[in-house]
Structure formats: C-alpha cells, structure tokens
Image (cartoon, rainbow over all chains, first blue to last red; front, top):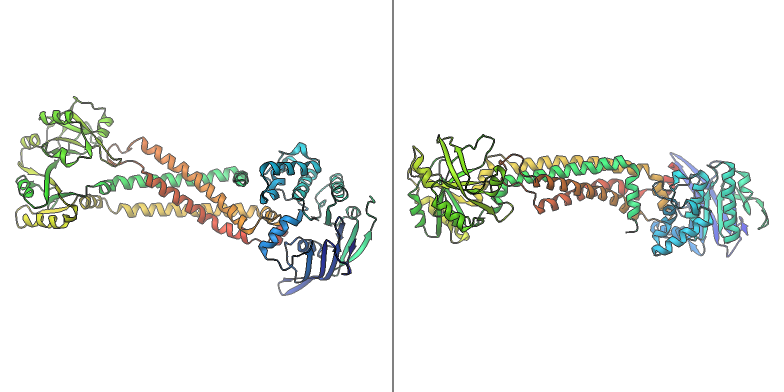
Length: 241
Length: 379
C-alpha cells in the first residue's frame, strides 16, 4: 500500500513533511514542500513529473545521498535524516540498491567485479562473494557475460549488470533513476521485465523515477510530483501485468 | 588485499599515462641513485677514514714537501703509535685518460698502517723484496687486465722518464667504499731516481693510541715543527679527506639542489596526473560512495594508486641505478668509490613514496570531499 497523505503507519518507508530548498545565486528554489509518503514492503512505485519537479531530488533524499531542509525519512525503523555522513554511508550499504540512468558501471572492471563491489564492504569470504555474485548475475540473465567488460556489453546488458550490482547485497529497497532513459524500447522492456520480476518473485521494494508513461505503467502505483508534493495518479492491483 | 585488483584496474585504465608516470619516477630515481653514487665517490673517503689516523702535510700546501727526518721526531710525540709516509707520483700509463693514483710508499710501515686493505703475506714479501715491485688495487688490476708478474711502464710527469714496475701484489678492500684503484711502489726507489728534492716526503700518516686525544696530539705535532722552514698542518684523516673534497666545490649542495629540482618537478607531474585521473572518474567515485564506500576509503584508494605508481617507478629507477653501478666506474678511474649503498636505495624509496603521498594528497582530499549528489549531477 502506498499513501501520500501522511496517515500511514508501520510502512517500510515513511516520509513526513519533507522540505528541500536550494539556493541558486540569490534565488531560493523550494523543490519539495511538506511531502508525505508511505511505502510498504514489496511495493513498486513510479514517480513522474516534469523536469525540475524534484523527482531525482526525492530519490536522492530517500537514498540518503542528500539531506532534506526539513522533515523526516524513516526506513525500516531507522530515521535517516539526522544520521551523520559516515552512518549514512553504512546505512546505504545495507539498505539501498541504486540503479542509474547511465548505468555507472566501472569501465575497468568486469561484470563480475562490478557486481562484487558492494560485497567487498562486507565480511563475506571470497567463496561466499562468488556465490552471491553468480546468483545476482543469474537473476538478471547474464551468467554468460560474467567476465565481460562494460564496453563489451550492450546498453541493456549494462543496465542488467547495474541491477545485479544493486541487488547483490539484498538491500531493503531499490532506487531506480530513469533506468530505461538511455535504452531502446526492446532493451527498456527487458529491463522493466526484470524489475517487475524482482518485485513479483523476490519481493523487492522498488521506487523508480521515469518520464516514460509506458514504463510507469509497469509500477503498482504511479505518483506525480506537483508543486513539491506527491499526488497519486494511477494504481493497479498487485499482480496485474 | 581484496581491493588490490581494483587499484590495479584503475591504474591500467590509461596505460600510456600510467607507463609515462611510472617512467618519470623511474628516471628521477635513477638520477637520484646516480647523484648518490657521485656524492659517495667524492665523500666516500671521508666516511670510511680511520678515526685513529692523522695526516700531516706542509703548512703551505700539500704540494710542498716535508723532510724525512720528521718521521723520527713524530714517533717521539706522546700518543703517536706509528708513522708512515708517501709521495704523489702522477705518472701516465699509456694514455692520460688511463688515470689511477700512484704513490711512492714506505714499505716498512705502509701495510700495517692500512690493515683494511688486504694483501696476502706472500705477495707483500715479494713486493718488499723487489726494488721495482708494485702493489696495485684490484679495481685497477681488473681494469687493465694486470696479473702478478706483469711489467708495467709508467711515464713520469713532473719527474720525466719511463718507470718500469713489476706487479708483485694485488690488494683488496674489506668494505665496499675502500679505494682499490691505487698503485704503490717503493719510496726508496722513487727517492733514489728523482733528480731533485731527495729526502723529502709528500705527507705523513700517523696512527695515534687514542682517537679521543686527537685534538691534543694534533696541536703537539704542529707546535713541534712551528717556526721551522717546514711548518706542518695536521688533521684527522677524516678532516683531511673532507678538505680534499671541498676543493671540488660544495658537492653536497649541488647534488641536493639537482635532486630537489628533480623531485619537485616529479611532484608536479604526478600531482597533475592524479588530479586528471580523479577528475575523469568523478561519476565512478560518486557511485562508489552511493553504494556504501566511505569518504575515507575513497581517500585511501586515490593515495594507494599514487603510492603504487611511486613504488613501481621507484623500484625500477633504483634497479637501473644499481645495474648501472655494477657495470663499474664510467669515468675510468676518476671516481674510485662507485657503488650504490643500501642506504641510498632506502633513501630513494622513502623519497619516492613521500612524493607519491604528497602528489596524491590534493586529488585524494578533493575526492574524499566530493558530494554524491553534486557528482552524479555532473555525470
């Protein structure tokens, strides 16, 4: 269940009265104003809105890579808005999987090494890391590209490696910022099928920013950012394709 | 250790740039090694000079002689244990470029005065027994392919004529810095053949019973010969060697200046390379931070890459310098101490690593301070 009225309780992600202001020269830009959001585990939420409406800002705040001007974000009982920089870093490693529009793979590392990166921060042995990486790459259907470098992969394959990197440490939720923005329609469909499968089969919670209504349709709920607040635009029954 | 492949992968993303930067380090360290060798060639004698030996020369100049009669007077001075003397010969073997130092030495005392230069008893006896005999250091013997029994003609310079010597002994050093380029022959033979200045010696070398009393004994020696036609100037062997080195100018300053300029340039080159390397990877560093890598890790990552370049370049440079010195003195005898000591290798590596850290620090700190949001916006 996804709510934007601030009345939810016991949800996985709780956002209350979120404000974000930027200073651009002498001008103050109020991007988010008193935004509320509740997302339960296993939900797939799409955020839409015009450019500059604050979609990516909201995603950055939810991912703990940016701090709000006011308000609070609580994820799985952890209030992240007042965490120190180093605590936030540790929190991100355990709870957030990022998928970016431009994939952001490390070009000098193979698919295997890119997916292994988040696990190097854990105490897992080399054999355990190998098992996790191979599983993640199998989930995204790239076991045959394990030792390929990003330059040897297509755009769609690169994004699937990025998704494998995002899920390999089994985070609490995934944040996808325009995951199909740099892909052709066929590759975009493959990536979206994969994300849907992660939600349906593995119970992942996914929050996604997109401009594409076709992509947004894949989510359980689509929310529009208008005047700094969220408005529910569409909802479909969980399980419907 | 698990991050090593990551560090190596980063270093090899721009192979040519990495090879050139490592090459800069290697060339700088090679030069550093050679500067150290040259410094050692000039100051080696100072470093290994005997603490219990003094050198007495004519107060006016070392080219002015002293009377042989001073030997007995020196031996009577309290604290003096042993005295030997020698003259500079300055002859030419075949060609003036074949320089090596030649000394007419006192065969009765020379061997005991310099025990660090090892000669077998048989060979020394053969040398003493042959009026035209000569002792040669192993470096010079090797250089000209001389063997025991060879007859060597040397053309005199300030004492004209061809002087022929029989090689009767070859001496060896016991320490790497020992000078094994010298050529000794009988002082009596020298004194008999020279047409002028008979009974005059170039300098005395004196062994004293207690190095702590050196200052007092030096004073006594110079007072003994004060107001005579041949006043003396006595120094410890170390001070004598140091004053000899000073004649070539301030070698230490020259070498430090050249070394300083080289390393400062290297610092700029490496710093610039690392800054470019970081700037190119802003997005990647932001992703690392986003997925949970700490600011401290990013700092250490950049420093590790910089250190790796410095370490590999440093090892290569020092290795090249070592190989170069193993091939021997390229000046054919002008630099009797021509070797790269372990202390120079350690100093070179420490300097290279320090340059690596300093050069990497600025880009590493800027990478550490990088805000994920700002960096991702730039991607």
